[in-house]
Length: 192
Image 1 (spheres, helix red, strand yellow):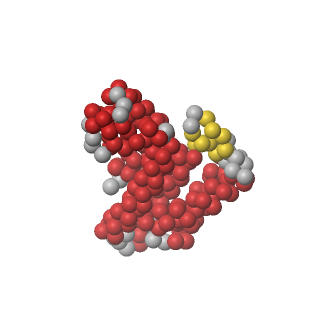
Image 2: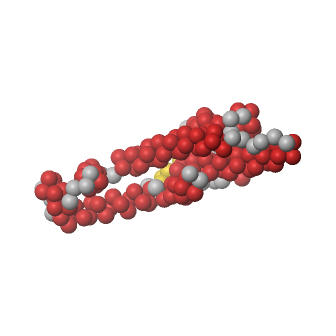
Image 3: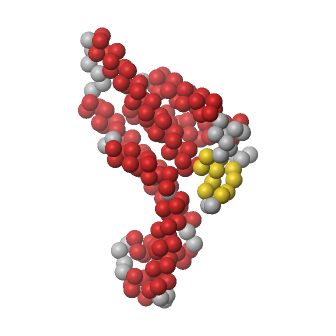
């Protein structure tokens, strides 16, 4: 049912397949709605923006796109669309003599949204961490706990060079698998 391909440890989705497209829509719709409502408390407007976003995706019909890049793209595109909507709405209200949305309320909403996104990123980190080979994962976890390479080598009865190799391999693997999240993390930092 899920039309995917594995290439270089990255799962790709084929958005030209109607079943895959529908599955992606169903899996991501609720998250996008909740995310959108954090920035724009008008549910009808959020639903319209999300519909437009999915329509644009269907019209572009990307053949293959990585799963993590797609989810990152969805959030970024929705965020930009909502910002455009809010800018337009602010201009309309300014000309109508009304104040734009309360900035304090927007800050609260953004903070809640960032927590949701951080949780998603944390899940992705954990998922990729669990993909590491067992020995590599245990050594990497010990290094993240702040243990020295010597302590890790003694704990697992391996050489310091093996510890270095496991840590290096884990760093490279994590960086490779999570490369699509970096743009999203940067976007979060740019809009605190």
